[in-house]
Image (tube, rainbow, N blue to C red):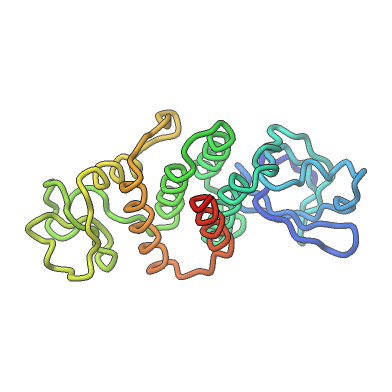
Length: 250
């Protein structure tokens, strides 16, 4: 059957001398694998539309096995993300994170919209660290791992939290902060920003500015949470860490 899909290239792998297996994150089916025959050839009509981070419309033959890509039309190339090593590192981390957490053919239109949104905003110059925290939270929520960001995870108090408990999966208020000796310190600014990022919608996403110390707290909290509950190797995150370290060191 011939089917038209709208999707974003999140991963590719070589298949033989001239073919590629392309993993799309589609509006219709979520993660979806297609065989792109001849796509490795420079003059192939499928070469450009199967580049990482590209959004396109894809015409595929579907059946009992892997779908075969017949043709594609580029909706957004995102050449800038592939040509800038730092931007490419962030985009690669987001797409690998999504790829690792999502099963194939599990539709999730909101996450498709979020992936489009963060990639577009990354290309437009938005803060990649804030985009990373938003996308992590949205993907975690879609897979059932979202931390509790509405009040104290233990008593439900709406008092401004002072710690974040990885073990209990959310904020701790001043009265409950001693219930987890390993809970991470949380500044008032970090607590407010984390709650905002967890509730934000794509159409409200603009330039969010936070101090460097707050950004580092948010990264530490969400990384610790992801490592505790997901426990998946993320090679692109390791590479991104090295890139950020080199960039900070000049």
